[in-house]
Image 1 (cartoon, rainbow, N blue to C red):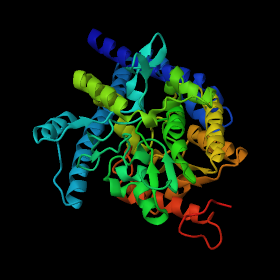
Image 2 (image 1 turned 180 degrees about the horizontal axis):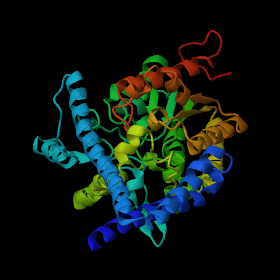
Image 3 (image 1 turned 180 degrees about the vertical axis):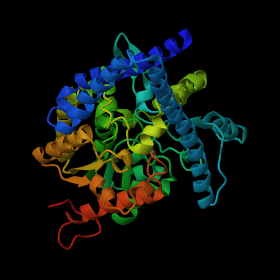
Length: 471
């Protein structure tokens, strides 16, 4: 009897505390929901009802308490069984994707792939990015690396190196970086100024498909030289840095700023704002690290760091606790029903402040691009949750969408809406490797085709092969 009482009271207390924690979380982001009555009910009234019901349940007869506690426990157990089932199913999805591509599923870890390549004589390294080369120092993020006694923050992977990136389709993305560390054929830096430069995160980079299947490569076939400056994990400030350090010297006619709805504001920007060196790119238009002329220095610094701290560096890119946390937080189950970070209101900062900073970043980018005679476009990219959610787009997602639209309209920056283009697809879930992943080849193709069609609408009458500036 005593054990039953402890069990039932423990279950009720745990559920009540969880409901109250959700209520506190939502209260901290109250401004995001107050204009949406349905969200107020779901996010504030519902947790109170659940917590209240748990309090009432504590006073029910023992038999009734036991039934309710068992129902709750069974539901929780079912969710975790579902989490493990989805993880197992995703493994089989990757195997099937590899089979369709005519290759065998590669179960190796990233470290194993790197070691196997090195054994075979290839000087391979795991991919590393700018955000992974920042470390906390008394509340501020400072560069891990230095050159000549001064801190330096590379924005890309190791230059002119074979890197192992990611595996979502059953095969590891392994490629040779260009002279600056980006995912381009190196020759793109030798020819005339590129027609297009793309700024963005892992979707722009082309994770996790072969180079010829990413957006930049597809656009290049239609418009000529297209420079891919996408880097996984980049948010608005790192993207502004990439534009400043690498796009500006090349002076492309078109710059496509690819905004990722899933993490640019709620995760990446709060992180980047802790880095003084990244804030400098926004605060001072003249600030430069002159990275485009420091390839040898960057290569030496990154290789030296990776050679000394390979495991630590890999853990910075792929958190070793990530998979455990995913299971604990039912990440796959939530993704399957569309309850990803945006919909549940997950945010490291304050959305209104993030939108305001993004407004400043985009204005700065527009001015820099127009300063060399180019044209900036904003490409709005949504993640898979927008299309898989059983609960609609959600108030936070729509607030981001409208806020970014308003910024583009106010700054007179044309916006290419990939979110709407994907929504018009008969089965948008088939455009991703799996829920919560990057695009598969079909998704990247649709994205590139949508961008190309939008750019075509801005071509001058009788446009020639040099792809004139929009009029």
